[in-house]
Image (cartoon, rainbow, N blue to C red; front, top):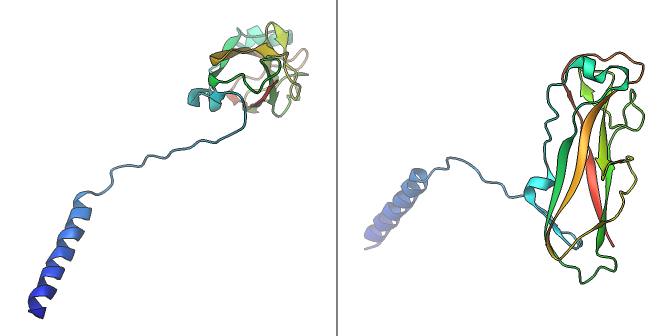
Length: 173
C-alpha cells in the first residue's frame, strides 16, 4: 500500500512539473507607479514623456535663432478640489542649464551652441522657479507648455544629435 501511495505521489509530482514547464513564461509585465498627496493624479503618458523637437536646420538657429515651438502637455486626472484653497497648480521645471544659451535647459550629444527654452502662456519658464498658477477644475485637466530649441547668440551652431531632460514638480494651492 505504501508503495502505491509513493508511486501516486511521484506521478502527481511529475505531472505538476510538466504543467509548469508547459506554461513557461513568454514575457514579463512590470507595473510601476507611486502614490502622492497631491490633489490630482498624473496620467501615465505624462509622467515620463518624450517630445520630438524635429530635425532643425542650422541656419535657423544661428545668431540666437529658434526652432518652432512644440507642445508639452501634462495631463491630470481625478482632480479633487476639496483640500485646495485657490484651485490652482504651479509647475516647476528643473534640469542642467545650458552653457551656450542663458536661461535654457542644457543639452547633451554632438550638437552644440544650443539650449531648450520652455514657455508657459507665452512667458519664458525659468528653471527652478514655479510657473504662474493655473486654475484647475474637478476631474481631468491639461497643463500646457511649449518648448523650442534656441541657438546661441554668438557661439557657432554645431550640427549633431542632442537630448535634454527636465523634471517637473506640481504644487497645488
